[in-house]
Length: 139
Image (cartoon, rainbow, N blue to C red; front, top):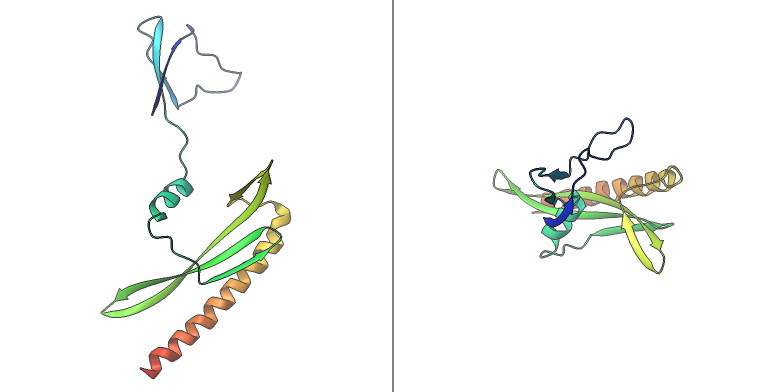
């Protein structure tokens, strides 16, 4: 949490039809106030922070026109049996000045490419599950 000291106006400034920002809390008991600001938080940040120590690599990756679809293999135990299941992550890489960034948001023009890559990921997963099934049958 970031703290800053500033002078509050008697009425909060807001434009017609807007409500005051819920992220700022102002104590109006003195001329100089302390404001607490809670920075925006996204699940992407939480996932990156939580996943950083493990650094799990995808088992399959497809890239087309800056869009990447990655397939991750996960292991679990159900009723004493080892189970393999898959998760898919999609992201778009873009350039902001000299820096490359990624996002999980896609524009209208990205959707046909994304749908093709997701279908390819689905086909890869089905083939991998069939392969795992034949391995389990051999055991």
